[in-house]
Amino acid sequence: MSRADPPTPQITVYWRPGCPSCMVLRVALALKGVATTRINIWDDPAAAATVRRAAGGNETVPTVEVGGRYLVNPTARQVMAAAGIGRGRRSFSRRGGRRPTT
Image (cartoon, rainbow, N blue to C red):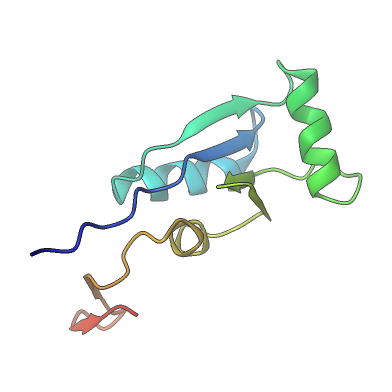
């Protein structure tokens, strides 16, 4: 009997145009094959309010919601860890060798 992986929680990336950190995160997650929902906070006042609540009153982007938890200006690795993506899989280290991911 095989154990099924738990479902990946929804990942929502709050962003705004012209934000270089947003672009870096979007590209990094896309290259890893991570599906996200993206919301432009300049087009959605409710989303901007969500970001302000998560970021101590600031409109800091990217802000990412993963299963109800908010990460402010995270790396792709932090987003994937919060979503439980990559656990038990193998990944490449910076030196090019393979190592198990915990």
